[in-house]
Length: 339
Picture 1 (cartoon, one colour):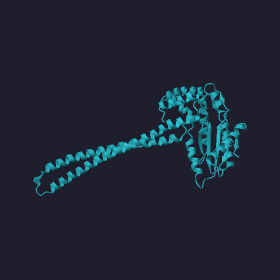
Picture 2 (cartoon, rainbow, N blue to C red):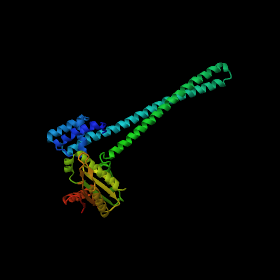
Picture 3 (tube, rainbow, N blue to C red):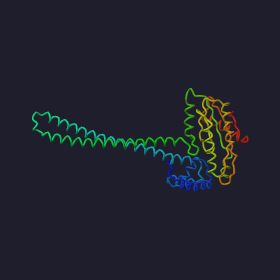
Picture 4 (cartoon, rainbow, N blue to C red):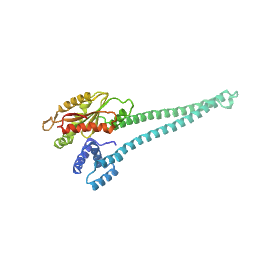
């Protein structure tokens, strides 16, 4: 789905969406923000009807239903956009095909005129067709075929520009489908595809997963507001991109949780990496413009797991997630290794 509102309209929708999410006890995660933003914009009436029905039934919108609504309406909208792009391309190719056919027919007709003129010139009796008439006929047909050819060339040039625009739109669409818009990190979709590919090969590499979660994020949002919370997530995303090198893959896993897949690296090495990231996040300072207050309470907890033979993908992620849970239970702002 493309959001085309200007910043003023987008801010107005957000101001409507957030109180409603609070009223119905909706978890403040990116999926729900997108869902409720779309709801207050009234862009998808079917989505609004189904969401209203859930609110009447449950008094809230359970996460399972939120995810289903997102898939059914907002992702489907992306698929429709792709279908529209395909339809535009088919229409363009059909147009070019018809134009080429018309030009080919005109060229064939011109060829016949040339042959007739040549035959007439070769006639021993030139009185059959006066030379002036032959020249005039050639001139008229040459002008016509030249105009036809120029028209076809113009259409080809237009088609080239349209194809370039479609190509750019496709590239942007693919980019948007892989990138988390808030942090500019890759999103969960990319993570799922990458981990499946890495673990699905016979010669799979050594693989370690770091899971990290910003500590007390809900309380931070309640105290400083969601916009400041978003800024913290942006800082963390920027820090991950700056501190990690290929082939490490940092992603926004969901909400305030991030994940880093690190191929060809063992547990001890990745524990050191996690500790470095923990220290860098702890050093983040954000100054509030209005009050001048400097926020220095940002920390994160980490869980680190190395893939073990026999692990399913869920097992692997689950062990890293359990280590993250242990880090939080152990006091937060710490790194724990999976057992």
